[in-house]
Image (tube, rainbow, N blue to C red; front, side, top):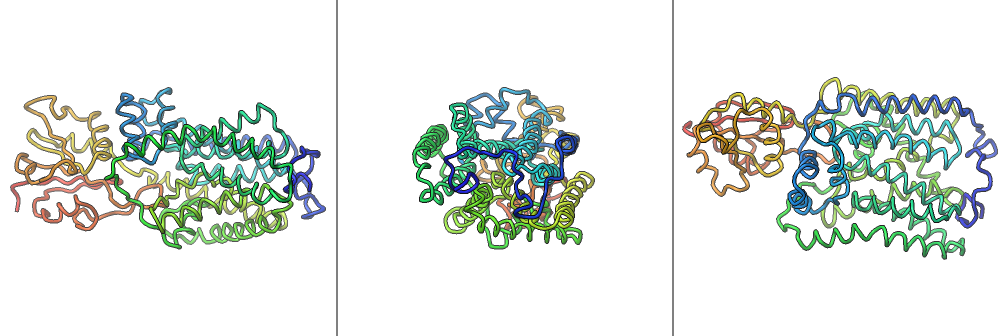
Length: 527
């Protein structure tokens, strides 16, 4: 077979070939190098603004507070935090220790810059694979305003890094696939894979997609077999650090680690695609209808073309497996064994999702697919800008909550928090505003206590003149990335803290609501 089938033993012979030329789809290249350069710069500029605008405005949310702890605390404490979580690899968090990280902006800046790099890499990879500059620009435009990618690029978590690594490994793999098996390329592929596996466990999906290409090409191309052995050796080397870390964690893992992720239902799959393509906020608005229809049709067409053309186009076949494989595996695992179904864990296949949507529409006339893709861009941009306007991108408002308590707290008061993650978040901002902390002044000391460490919270209430309760929103959503829906702090079915509060409603003197949490003031002597 030729280069663009499963015969992968020969190098690319016609680098100037336009993918989908007039002999196949009735299309010619319409974008020249100068136009492409200007378009790419504009797209990167938009992506830069959306990812860095007011980057430190929102307080760190609970998971980001853990990132701050692992980046800023002494190494032993950082290691303890990672080991107690059990489901996270250390590379991203420890890399932040080498960079300035004293503020919210500095903690998030690496992710924002990696998000920008992801836009450039997606355009470069699409151009390299399909030799179509306009397709590359549309891919970059879709990603630049993609709410899912924008939000995670503004978050001090490893997901923007996962996206960039996914594209880097994909590019290196196909360079090897097409015959460019130089020592330098093997080093790039192995190091990128090692970095990815040590950054997040979900990047194993890349290995799975590559393996599926080998599985389907094995009988068609005997020359694959010698370099398959080299590929397998590279994967073993790349996996060693992640496997060693996993072994150490499993021997030390706390058996009482909580599992907050609900088992998914079939409806969660379309919600995941909605979130990753257009951004999901929990509300269905009329303006989303065209975008959802376009995304759905594009994905259906793109998947069908990838299946039908798998012998001629290994790139789309790879995107298909990178998309379908982890989504199916994670859903079945979460349904049958233990749930790990969270949308942000799927960042590894976001490039595949976007390319398959573009490929699905690119079979139509230019007038049709330009309008379709343009509507996705407009809908996504509106979603991002509106979240900035209404403040819903601020998931948890710890600074204002901590400042309010610090302003109104009195000697003899106590502060009750549910568990260690809320304790770390509250004390981080309380220390910045409070005139005194627990233990610093015998007269004005305020006790900060975790409910999880108190067998009987009533004892604390008896010892304190007043009791401040910091209640983080217990609603967890595997899809939403911004502010969560409101909650009733007296609902006994939500958490242990809610159950405790439900019997003390008469003692509550005041309730203050902030994004993502509520502050309640209790008088223990009340009814």
